[in-house]
Length: 243
Image (cartoon, one colour):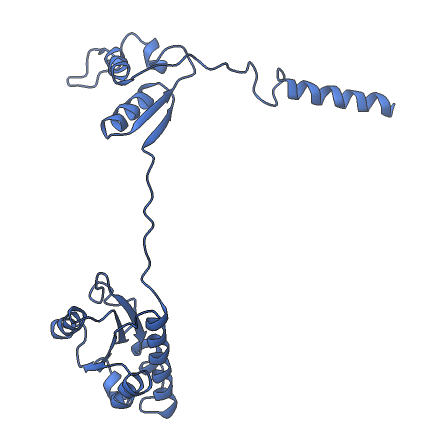
């Protein structure tokens, strides 16, 4: 039989909760119906004293805490306790701010919310994040300035990089230029492209090279491809049969 969780519950009486509900009756739902050893109330649960009380109970062995207070969207960081399951029950917006105060139905609604929160704490488990090995291999397509720069930066960051270039040389369009536009003041003289130095860095970083893969002379669907030729011949055959 699995070991039973130790669950503690807390009811905040601030934000009109204490003025609109029978807090003692609410606490009895936790202690009498669900046999929780601890169910405390606090006028300011999100304050330093309230948070410290919760932390002390966690240190004393609480596996899960049920917080009957404001919306889970509020005070998310305040009520986040690493390694401890936290169930938030919205008594403020869903109950006392939207229903008649000190009413039998309002009280019953609050008690039902508390019951649901306690059961969630009993049944749910903390999620275990998946730990998977990350493949640190990258494919960079294009051996121009952008592709080579990206490949070098990735290699320096510890990634295994494969750089693909369709031509038999690196450099892209810049390799075809003798000079580049000025990039330094006074911006009057053309400058060297620097592409040879960049290519040298890539070649030094590359452990090995592979030969160029064979490339199709025509793209799928273009006039030179076998698929396109077959389709045209089929259309012509159908046209002749129709005549």
